[in-house]
Image 1 (cartoon, rainbow, N blue to C red):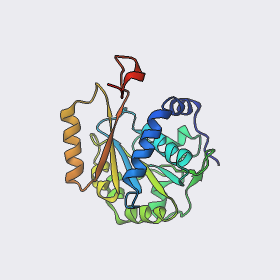
Image 2: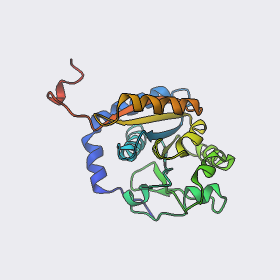
Image 3: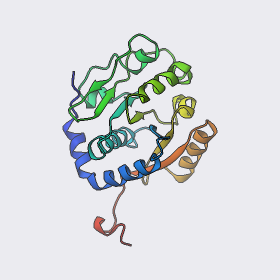
Length: 219
């Protein structure tokens, strides 16, 4: 089944086209030597816009930069990609890591953008993410794609992000403006670093503009 992106997400991506082009350029610049190709998108808390950010990054790299991109739902507690792309929840990531299936990538209506859903329920998600099977799965997937983007779970409330942080080339932290305090963001950043994570940047989401938006970047 081909994944069809929901109309609401499409509109949001189109609305943020300028920011997407900047993010695309930053990512391509960061990974110019080919060493940073597997990205983990996380946040401090839930509902900070992490999933939309992951989709937007995948869109920018696949449609604007014409790279072959794989988007993975790594949020096993509250997965959303199967709903957003209107595809079945499984088989997916968990089934791949457990060796139940091999080919779980789904193509989408967007050229060069593919999706892996979360898959079948597992008893202990942290055990799956800290396992060598998960690392092996990422390594194998990287062979077939220019970039792999994993929409992970938030750091606060689950250990999944911290136990898997070391397996990614780069981590992007999504922070909701005027909601997440800098103290919390700093604490989360330190936890990711201690866990072996390589934080390459942050996305400030849901910004509010108190002067006309077109003036930003000129002052």
